[in-house]
Length: 148
Ligand code: HEC
Ligand code: HEC
Image 1 (cartoon, protein in one colour):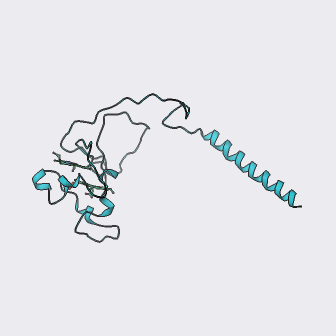
Image 2 (cartoon, protein in one colour):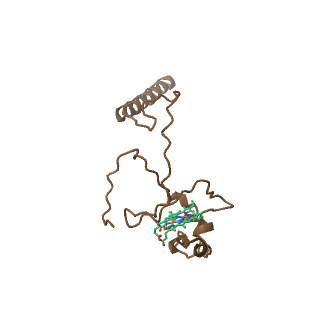
Image 3 (cartoon, helix red, strand yellow):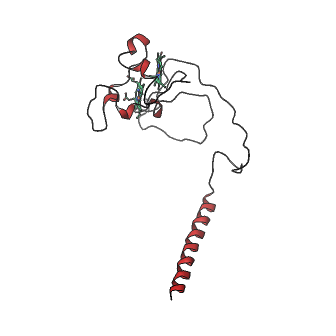
């Protein structure tokens, strides 16, 4: 009896495994590596350059974090230092002529106003990204409801 139960359980496991394998094959996973096998050597992607520094880039939708209009190579953000804030903090902005970080960046997730930048907003490049003139990797048909 015990053996039959064991056999039955194995059959169930194999069936489920088989089905999920089939489902994956049907979906056809498309990765950025394309058809290159995992252990094969892919061609290095073409190196593209950062866009030259400019004065602010247009936003595509209302809530968009403004794009970074300058290069940020070597600008470190870690526990001890935040290079962005050395120009963008309220204390430094006047002298560096950088845009002050928005007031929303002092608000924590409970809505409390802090006297320094909120931990939620500390890692600037989570939201603000520099630009390259590169082809999009995937198509994007996003259209803002309220265009600017
Ligand atoms: C050496 C000073 C300096 C540093 C460091 C710096 N910035 Fe800037 N940033 C500027 C200046 C100046 C401008 C304004 C450019 C202009 O409009 O003329 C600017 C503009 C921007 C803007 C556009 C603001 C807008 O309203 O369009 C964003 C976003 C930004 N920086 C993000 C960052 C981030 C993120 C970092 C760190 C990775 C960073 N910056 C580091 C000086 C700096
Ligand atoms: C969680 C996403 C997020 C993070 C992290 C973040 N920002 Fe922003 N930032 C935004 C959004 C969204 C806006 C536009 C709306 C607003 O002003 O809050 C903005 C606006 C700004 C502006 C323009 C302010 C203005 O008056 O036009 C600057 C400059 C800026 N951020 C710099 C920074 C810097 C520097 C950091 C890191 C210390 C940072 N941000 C971290 C989302 C973020």
